Length: 121
Image 1 (cartoon, rainbow, N blue to C red):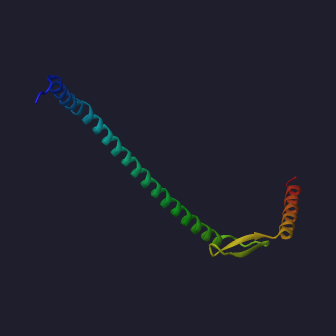
Image 2: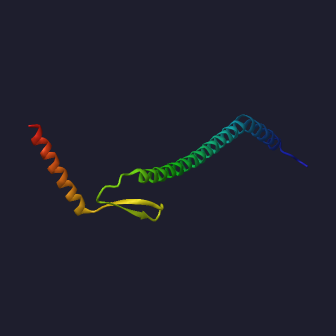
Image 3: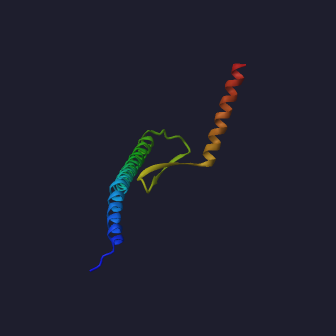
C-alpha cells in the first residue's frame, strides 16, 4: 500500500484548520448568535407583556368611562327640553334635546339678560 505523503500532509492540514476555525471562529460566532436570539426572545416577551398591559388599561378606562356616564346621568339636572331615553348598549339613560323647547328657553334667557342690562344702565 503506497500512500502519498501529500495526502497525509493534507489530512493534518485539514484537521489543524478545522480545529482553528472551530475553536477561534465558530464558537464565538455561535455564542453571539445565541445571545442575539436570547435578547430577541426577551424583547418579544416584553412586547407581549406591554400589549397585555395596554389591553388591561383600555378595559379599565372603558369601565371607568361607563361608570362616569352612569354617575353623570344620575346627577344631571332635568330641565325643560331634556328627555331621558334608555341607551340600549349600556343600559343607562341618554339625554336628547327638543329643538322647539330649547328655542323658547333661549328666547326667555335673552329677554332676561336684556332686562338685566337695561336695569344696570
